[in-house]
Length: 289
Picture (cartoon, rainbow, N blue to C red):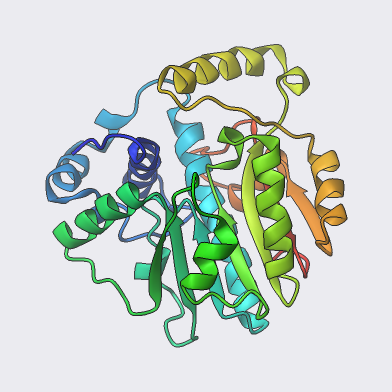
């Protein structure tokens, strides 16, 4: 089943992560639900011929980045849980599977998945078809951005902004305006002051890329724009870190492609690595894991 908007992006990301589970050894993020959540028919087709869904020389870099950014967020969550944080908010959850495969089920944690209502309905259909149980610890928080705000919908869903939390915000920031991004981060900074923080990915400005990277950038930008999802915002990593500290985050540390590869992909026999365009950021009350 290929979804319509707004879940088309979630589908593309989930497909890349599923192919990563099947093709790359070892997977950078061990996710046994990445394939089943796509539904029985797609899962069977993927298992039979995983490479059929990979097109173009950029595919390995994209599936590496889509997988490692989730690993990065979950590493930050694990460190925060060890410090006593018990709330996790997944902004733009899509087909994220963490809540259904929590590796530390004995450590109490409440998970809020925030997304468009249509995307959440579609996800729950995927979960049902795959016989993946919805744990009592997960709360679905639908949001209509034209009429609702993130603080309001989270508060109504039982989120305690004074207790500390980890937020993950993956695959979203480049598509938003700078004002929308900063408004969200200002709230997250307040909501994580007692502990935790936010893990997110972002893109750097085109003028900071090499000639070869600009060619790739232009091709991808044209593709997402044609799909009705244009990129809108880019950041210099150091400037963004300063802005985050100005918003009240005690720590703001970007992770460059080189640092991502050194941390997560060193010594791989298959040579899997991320490309040079995507960056990760941790901003929070404590240093990153």
